[in-house]
Figure 1 (cartoon, rainbow, N blue to C red):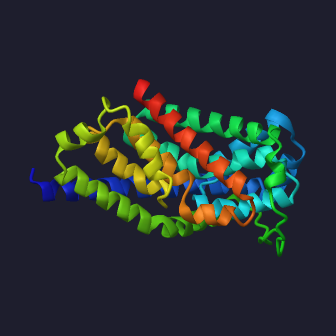
Figure 2 (cartoon, rainbow, N blue to C red):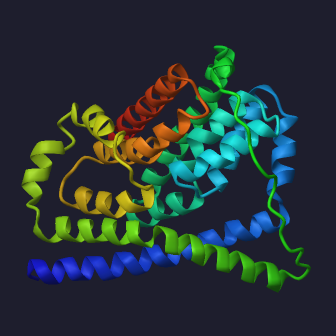
Length: 295
């Protein structure tokens, strides 16, 4: 098969697969939150302290398919509702990195080992990092932020069918917001799959190059990419010989911290806390990359 045909085949198949996964999983999550209102979640988290709060904060992040910048308004809402600082930080780290859409994509495209390893490392780091930052007294680094407005009023629906329809409409809206990123990611992956020599990628970032993991994490942090964008690229790179460790480090660095998010975080956190959060993302990226290289 010539490179053009290989690229087109990759583009069509992967785009269709990811679109179906995104819409299906997002609809299910939306349906869950139809029966579990956001305000009720905030109030429950506000009553949880210590490791339980960190665990629930990371779990909430894992159930909310937000990009890094969309996470900030939710973070402010949690702080406003009185949710403990540690639980809020666990949510802030987990939300853009760990959600059912990303995990399902990893499972389908890269296999169960990649899915389990990624999920375990990111969730554990979210819980532990939130606890450490709170115990270090860094809640003092949160600025006083005024929030206008309150929880959004939503029409009360009674039947399962009505709630399912609203969840699906919300999933379609979310899909439209990420479609451009998805198209770019699949297109880049298709070009890599069809045209980039495998031996070149293997030589520069193969499993034998141990420096590839921290370098990929550093490169990823300044970028603004959604994990949904980079996963199809990761698939193409791994098929061409790139080590899975550097790929995952790039995914976490790019999705967990970006220039727009750093700017938004600076409006609610002081510089010291922003810098420490960047360090946590970098450490998570490197640790996940190392774990991936071992399993």
